[in-house]
Length: 425
Length: 177
Ligand code: FES
Ligand SMILES: [Fe+2]
Image (tube, rainbow over all chains, first blue to last red; front, side, top):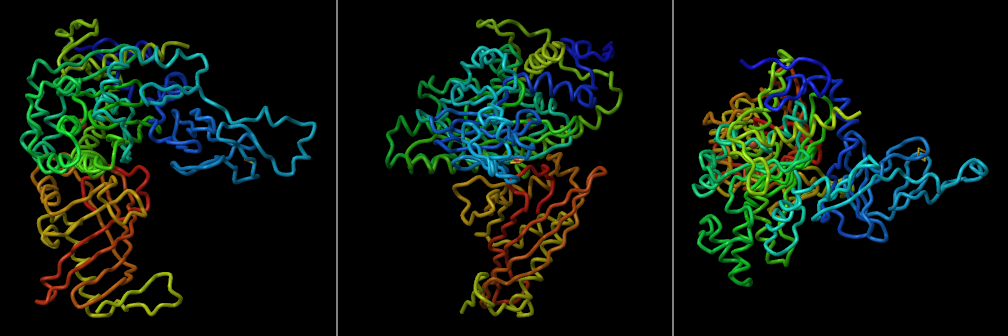
């Protein structure tokens, strides 16, 4: 007998093996999540390759708050609230670019890349009223690890590295798909779905849905790629709870550490032409490295609450309202010599094949999530089950609670963090 | 012989849409639109040449699509796989796809010759699914190869769908534009 999850306090709504359906549908919970999670946690805002030089900027959001991420004159990455200190106009409506500073369109107050207020037109009216130095743009704490840049609205948040904890090891591994080169952002798909953000948060650690929802994609790829993603009954494919709501799901464990390569694994036949082309200029070991990493790493690293480093891309979620979420699927590839353009072209085609609003994978995921949101409108106390594999979840050698890749260990990890943050007032 | 009209030229003499070669292209564009609304994907695919491309870019300025991320960048092989996906019944997004109605109009012939026509147009599509109407507005460019054997042999060599909101979040779709 699976009991309902009664109560309204956040702490009552999440149990080890189930959460209340109202977690997806209750607007008051959503408001609390914005203040207790999205305004307190470290939120992913950018990858370092998106801010290549002084003056580079990107506009994005921390929770619902618009921000600009900049690289200032000294090379310091800043996250600034995208809101003029005068009467509140947004300063920047471009998604990214290169600037010397930001000038408000309304009364032309101008700000430097570090957010300091530089100029006010007709300043005599402010004499004896205020000092410019007190009116910098609001700056968010900004820290990065392995090229992943995060910001938080909480001045007292623990250091980013502590928050990431054991996830750092997996970030290091993820970046190895550059094949010895750093990785860079190649492009991004953006799409929206009519559902709660946690449905998407769960999905990047949901191995269970893969062969069902993605049957159409599986049917369209070559046999080697389909075989690579056939993890359903493979006991070596596992999910670990890494703490702080983070988890990692290893679909292709032989690609979890791309440096561990005994040379026995043949490169996929679909890349034969690419291998031939690359071999004209690169040595065999280098070619093997980048081609073996063509589908990215063998795991999805789910970082609570808004980013997943998912095989060969980043999945970034942005909650809009209790029943609307926007997602970015950010394509990445090695940032190396021009010969590698051919590698990145191929990576872009692989990304397009699965991801984005017209991919062979994403629309089917989105349909599944829409259906969860619609179904969850029934019986708000009826539980959403996150109990799969609970009886076979055991601490692994590293101490991480570990279960099969199709189990719901990663969701339990995320909901434990949700519960801790939501109960803390 | 190809007559080209540059949009920036001062008062260019426009190519009339009544030019019989342009009219053939427009007929084909309308036929394509109707097949897509009816989700007759096999018949739709047959309107393309073997070297034809169907593209929905993200970058509004892009003219070349190899080195950038697109929403759709289909050659014949990808297009056939896409048709299989849309019709074989495994893809839950396609099985439960929105119903669509689209109009294509505001045709501007860009170039015309006896074997090829390039036409720009506007497409407004409404997709209805589960009590929601989504609006998809786009500029289209069709490059159409005219057949010496008459209109039945005319084929699409390239179609580019430039959504007005290509750089922001659009719904994940179970239909084609
Ligand atoms: S609101 Fe920005 S200068 Fe007035
Ligand atoms: Fe999926």
